[in-house]
Image (tube, rainbow, N blue to C red; front, side, top):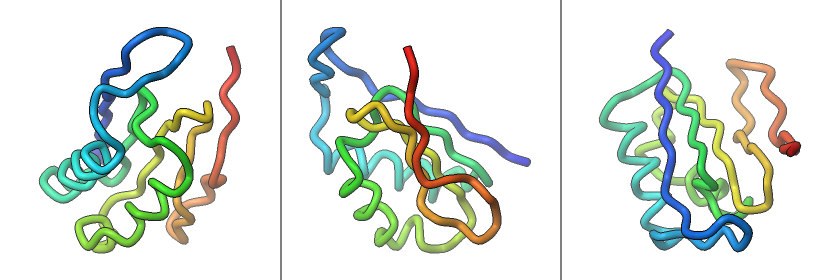
Amino acid sequence: MKIGTMSLEIVGRNDKWMVLSSADRRDIVAHVASKHSPELLVCAGFSLSDPSDLDALKKDPRILDGRTSLVASDTEDQMRAPHDPRHNIPTAYPQSD
């Protein structure tokens, strides 16, 4: 299984302010998925702002090809994954300190 991991930069420890805009982060995630085609792409570092970013990624044609399962961290301290019939991954994982 080809697994990809990526993390995006944040500024500060408590405020979780992202260096890149939400749209730019989604674009990077979609680009990595389409260019490298991992079977599983794990995105850490508050890659997404909230669940709406995941909804937008699910509609991106670079993700829709079905080659990559995505799990991504968001600023609500959740790991999120779109529903994928190829696996039994829950769609949200609460993070613990």
